[in-house]
Length: 379
Image 1 (cartoon, helix red, strand yellow):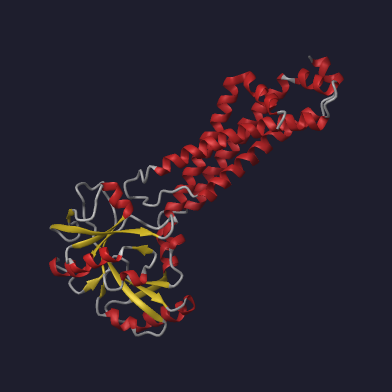
Image 2: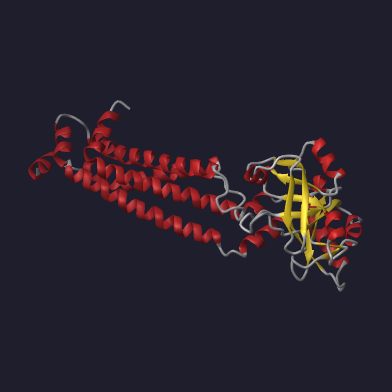
């Protein structure tokens, strides 16, 4: 650390070049952070999926309904602990850009199947007592400035008409990546008012006694309704979320490809910067060796400059990205999970240091092998 002033002084000899190189690192790590956030948003459902939950959908498509009567039949299958269901509502609040997921839910079993969503008991009781009551995630409530007691008008898209709901509760998640954007209301309210589809639901969510029961329960459900007008397709929650994410393409490959190009370009830029810096100071490095500094010291001096650039630029870029994600979802509901986790920040710092070492190792090795006589002759 006692040679840090010397390293800083060397970098500030060419302030513009150093600033541009640090800026390159900052931009690259900012993009890295955004790619991690986007990947997390698309894989959110996979990451938070319960190992002890199955999703039962119509075999034709998830947009096709299932009979409400299936509920009790599924519940009797050995290994099934509880069952609930959801129905997609798809309404519009004020403007079509204000997207957030809205579900008609089974209030009797929703919290049993989804224990990770925390709702105060008094709020849940108020929701049960109000046929027009609604529970909203804290993310959506914060986004629109809603509070308990507000009456929210939503224009039906799938189910025409003007629907109004009373906010009776706000739920929180147990983990940072839990979905806090959902809007729940009672299925009975939907079934009473809609003009078609009465007695049908969207899909079932089955909670198992143990994840080990998944295979046999999955087969039992699909066999029970085989050759019926509403055949089923049962998958683990993780598998269904993974299939849904794949509909957007191979996001993982795209992110890795873009990230590789960005960091390879950064490696070339930083390596070129350090090589120029060493060539400009050949005489000074030779003098250092002549007065007694070792070859290894000269090597670590050059490598230290590269690492300092990487550290400052990397921390700057990741810090800006973290601040950017703290502002919430800029896609207005398309990517409800917009969060840069701290493990990703640590990984970004490690990558920045790795690029700094790779970019500086060749110029540093060249400086280490520099002969004093040859260097002074070239001055």
